[in-house]
View 1 (cartoon, one colour):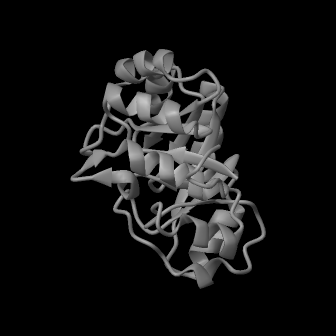
View 2 (cartoon, rainbow, N blue to C red):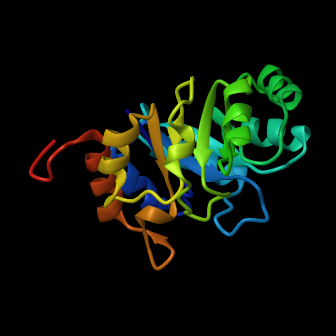
Amino acid sequence: MIVKICGLRREEDMAAVNAAKPEYAGFILSPRFKRFVAPETVAAYKDVLLPQIRTVGVFVDESSEYVISAASQARLDVIQLHGHEDNAYVEKVREASGCEIWRAFTIRSQEDVAAAEASLADKVILDGGTGEGKRFNWDLIAGIRRPYILAGGLSDDNVAQARDALHPYGVDVSSGVETDGVKDPEKILRFAREARGIPDAGD
């Protein structure tokens, strides 16, 4: 199961992520959000991260021109869309950027699940909101027919439960590995270990 640590902002966060070795490191590239990081800063952080950790840029209802430009400047591996972007937008950005495209869906109903299943994105994320750390009703996705990344309300305390109950393709966390609004290296490490079923005693 893949692990993504999102909402990274500081150089100290890169050291914590390198210690935990998730598959993906996520950065918020929409300026109106508190965890925003400038594209040129993400490019610099990419040089600090272990080479096997892929970078994900998160965008919420931005113009396709901005997304394409920022993705190039940040040297992203993955573009994650977390707004109301439709399939035409997904295809346009993928073709222009050359990046893998992920699309996040806020799950409140079966209609939201159906929309996720119909998405042309390379991967879909099922979330409870837009970075608020809200858990949604997992019963709604019992019959989903495509692999997904689970987000929303996850932490080192419940990610093992989510893994065992839902068997998602991956898990995505941001506020669940923070203490007082700042990424906590110990929580990041525990989250990655719990997600993978690795005991605290060793890797």
